[in-house]
Length: 186
Image (cartoon, rainbow, N blue to C red; front, side):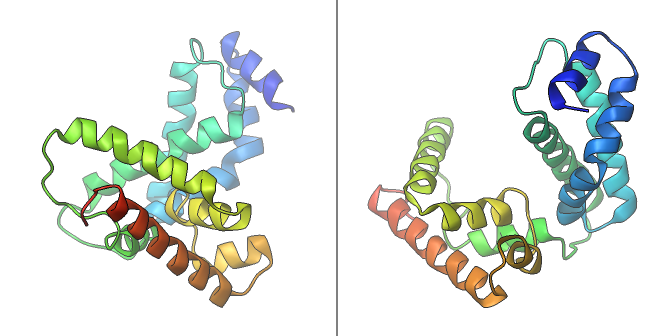
């Protein structure tokens, strides 16, 4: 079923919307959740919570791209689950590995006017991403937004794992330079 029809089902409060969403996107959403949680049971819970949140937010939301809308919900829920379940124990999820890799670019330094700084940082990172070649941008987003493994990214773009790693490394260095040049001391 096409996404527009699925969204219409949500708007009509037709419970088949969840079944159709599950049939079309369950594997995709489970991969996103698993990349963050590194636990299949929690991943399934996150995906089920995604369906509930989609049900509760449509209407009033009417997403143009259902796949991305659901991915964003799954990502947010999975990060919340990870924070809840790993306060005492650190795991080896792709989420944590990705954050570790980005630590060299963005650290936890105390900043004055933190909310303003965060907004400026977000704008700067978005501008930086759009200045990248498409492949580099897509690799970066796959790794640091969807938390895909190096191996998954390599297979998806049909390039070597070494190329993925070097692209990410160069992109992180460029991001660090850009942040430093804009006054975000890291």
